[in-house]
Image 1 (cartoon, helix red, strand yellow):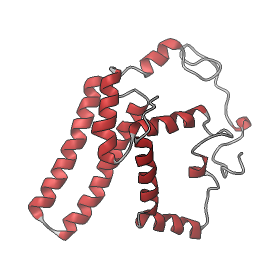
Image 2: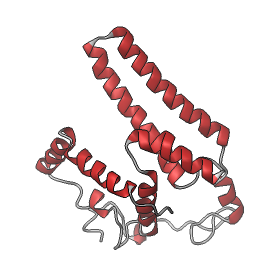
Image 3: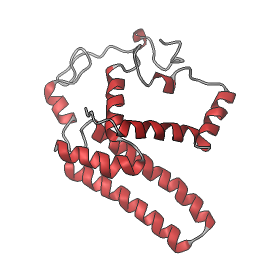
Length: 187
């Protein structure tokens, strides 16, 4: 497996063995109390984070409409990309059900406020992402193709960049998202 991952995952002998302490068990997992602390959800902080992302987007659109300048369009395009990534980062947290303590609120916000505006089906993402966590870097890792065989050649890198720049990758991902949207099973 390490040959496929290009050295991304080191052999277990390369890692320092951590002595268990009052927070970390011998298997590297947090003890129950520490795990509860790590999983404590701040509903207010997360709501403010979401509101701030939407405020950022609103300000960007306001500046574009007010200044109506081609250079501003380029800057706005880059900043909206950042906003898109922020929405997806919080959607990822909602997929783990760590965004809001109320499951219904978490799933609603993850789907309608974060996922769909980012062209992402949160439920479909959750299914695939949880499979990834069950087999992380293992033989049945569903995301292995995303990071296998790195580092890549310069030619391969530019092929990937062209696919992304011309929307081929985006169209493939959107098609899969649309297919996933018709599936009703949730995790």
